[in-house]
Image 1 (tube, rainbow, N blue to C red):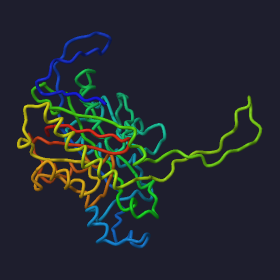
Image 2 (image 1 turned 90 degrees about the horizontal axis):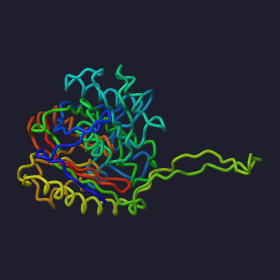
Image 3 (image 1 turned 180 degrees about the vertical axis):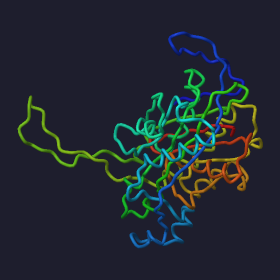
Length: 358
């Protein structure tokens, strides 16, 4: 496991772009955000018609009352494009000036990734590098860090980081323990090159532990095997598909409540800031009980914890930027505010960062 720091006063970074090593002292800042959700809203009462549950049982255990699901002609790609356009509009950046797009998603519409399609639909005529990052609920945090690296060491100027997932595609809708949790959404932020004194990323802490896969997974399975004659002795395999999401809720809860406070503390310890200097706590919106337990362990004021999962459920990689976008547009998060953000999920992976809005 590895962790590191990029504080505002960090040492100069080597830029090896174009094959020449030069010392640079760049920073990057968040200048725009946007989000998009499907039109279909499913309430707890709606779910009670499908599985043995009710609104009180779900809301008291998760804090969730509604979630949005893709339907009709909607796609994850269309949501990601809409969210990206809103972020570009807020940041006052033209699509042609975007030179990198990172799509953080574990459920793309296309197996080989959707970032290039988003680039095309946005009208980015300079054909910027665009690719997917797959790290489930930690994906957006990794996207933020990756964007900062590309700007500081790669010479990129405007980077779109999109968190988008449609976990509903892989949920077992007969399992009341998991189907009540998830929703679909997309959200994006625009990160721009700036002077190092304006750098938004004060520090970070990222880890993974593959042993935890048994607690949260969605494995590939074979639909069948065709034993017809084959060439060169290789059997002709049948089709493959992903199984339904499998989750041990109790173990995931223990994992998150134990590891997230330590990760945030580790990231904060690499700065000159104290916990009292943090304006907002922004966690992956997995479960209100997890959010409350983490805040309690950190002794962080409840009124400064961002939460919107009551209306959207767990939207995986979209949850942090979706909550960020709503808080910014509602006037809660303002320019200069410092945020402790953390993602955690399948892999198992987790990561925290101390960041500044604009």
